[in-house]
Image (tube, rainbow, N blue to C red; front, side, top):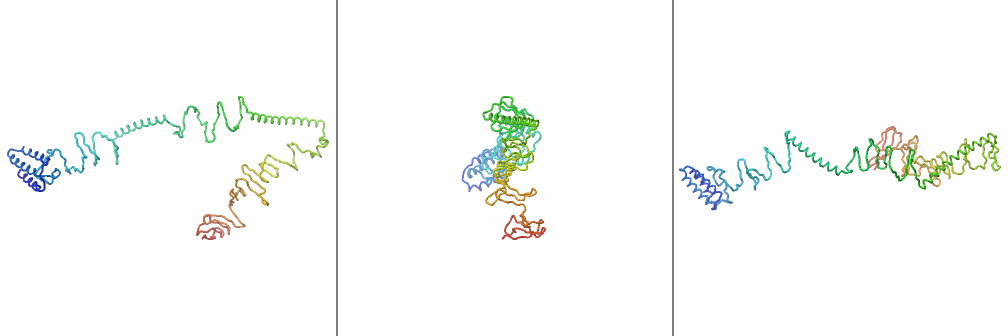
Length: 455
């Protein structure tokens, strides 16, 4: 015990001159506990323990430690061992032990009887928990998370049930509020709406931007058409067909015309037939027919010159025909007003030829200058053997596929030619630039020379 006393006394004595006199409550409590422990020793040591404790208490009472704390280096613990059971309250600063190092400036770990609270992050090499885990926030896993089949099955079952309920709810909501704008593609079977019922097994109605196609019959209570109606087949009307004034007038006029022509033709045929029969029976001499005292037939087959109009529809070969007015032949040839039209009755020039939408004219352009071409925005092609040798564009450009002047052939290319050609043939460069040739000239066969460089 004397050895302990001496060690502690020497350590405290060295610090006595540098510290003011004060008493720390923690030190007093510590010494009280030590004294209590020492008094519990055998009766033989009590006196010495009492003396040592009193001396130690007296020395400590004369000491003052900054901030009411005892630096560990101020006490020689080599001969003294304190039990942590005797430390009550207070705060140990810069705490360090074999397995714990406290570097925090404020409380980060709170240990209670039924809970350990970590204020911020918990970092560990490995974490093993026996029991349930409740996580209020998100979980981020940077590595693999192996799961046993039981856990996987539970997760899958819970996710499937949750997804099924969510999808069922979302689909139900969308179906209750679905819009036709959300339906794209696919075929709707057994389709029905307030005004449409689809019973067809194949496509019967096709709706396009500019036409509606009905594959078979159209049945309707009433039909109203604004515009022209074209019927390629027969039109059968089972009821009345009321007509407006204009339609009725046009219909009556057309029917009257057709009936008149048919009746007239039948009457003419009958009258002419009867007349011919009568003439044959009476041996009537046609050559002696007189009209107002003038013979109708001159010679054997020539009508009298005073006959100006006739409706002869069929005659033999005509050797000479003279027409003073307009004339049309076969619905294609027209002649009149010093102009001739093919497939047109309104020729735009002395000769105008129409072929579908194309018009070609031949006539006078200006004084002492003729014109062959078209008056419309159409290209003109001049060619032979169905080739497009020359193309005259509507913008005034003349395109010639192959040009030969006298015996010199001209062409163009974006690179030096290497094909066979006649000597003297010229090929112009279509991509000229400084330092490049503006063309090439054939030296015979496939040999070509540069005509000059662009400077």
